[in-house]
Length: 353
Ligand code: FA5
Image (cartoon, rainbow, N blue to C red; front, side, top):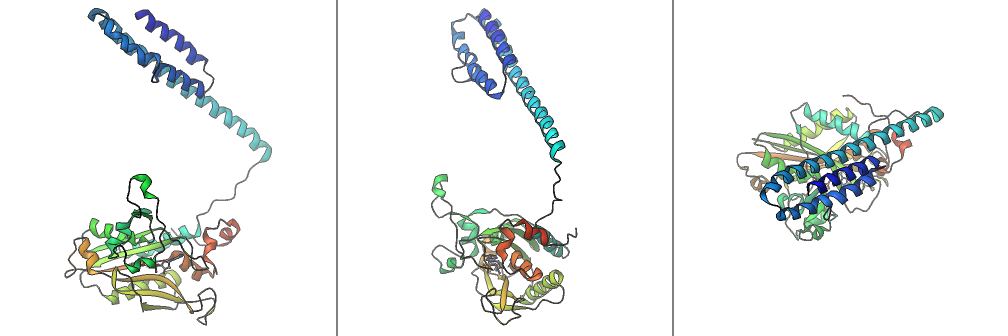
């Protein structure tokens, strides 16, 4: 047995040395340590050994096993290093011939704008929070006072995930339709007073047009304190629009139904393309909706264990693409995500960080 182990060591060390690439090494590894590998099967013969023999064979076997797997790893590292240096030598010679000059990298305009928006709210004490893009029906709907079969679900054309594959009941896993899926998480995680924001992408099975994409960003605010009212919501909206646009933006707050706020509001900006006259871009209304907002529904606060008699809350979900449309006179928000580098290059958004 001792001789056999030493023999395996010599033969395989030689094979490892001669391996030319990673696949050769993988085969050697399988021959040694795979299900039917030499080193896997060998210990089955140990039962035939007497105790004294086992005292010698067992440590020898372990030593050779470690030695061979170490040799494989060393060789693997060497092959990788050789291929990298070969690659960089080849790349170097191509570079010398072609002289690549890459354009200066820039952040996407949405990223810049969202960072600026986050800074505007950081100044008044808001911190950032992340929620999942793939989420459960519970956080996206139920926790927000929208039970199954509730007609308000039609407000969001939802993309469901084929969840049965993952052992989850059909219809329970989805791409979040709004950043409001963060609301209950935020309310549960933090004790009031709460000032949290959440920026990220949302997804809907939309009829696409100049104001609607299937994949778009949202910016959510959750603000909980004692004695908050609609006046605070109005103040927050005016504060943000002034900071983001300067004085020239004309906006209105109008009643709007969302099951997770009471009362609910829509925040619209006057359509800059038709100056309120009505056009194709604003859907002939003269206004472009920027955000949905409202006073957090007592039931949602209760779901998170917050006493609605003691605390009130403001929630706010804005569309950054719509903001950018108005700020830079872009007549179709689908331009932001269609990969047109010319368009993105031309859109100069100043980065102030
Ligand atoms: C919502 O999604 C609510 N979650 C907002 C909210 C948050 C209400 C907190 C109350 C409290 P709504 O579907 O209206 O609401 O979308 C909010 C904003 O997201 C819109 O005003 C718009 O600016 C943007 N938005 C919505 N759908 C799209 C879309 N398909 N493409 C681009 N932007 C969109």
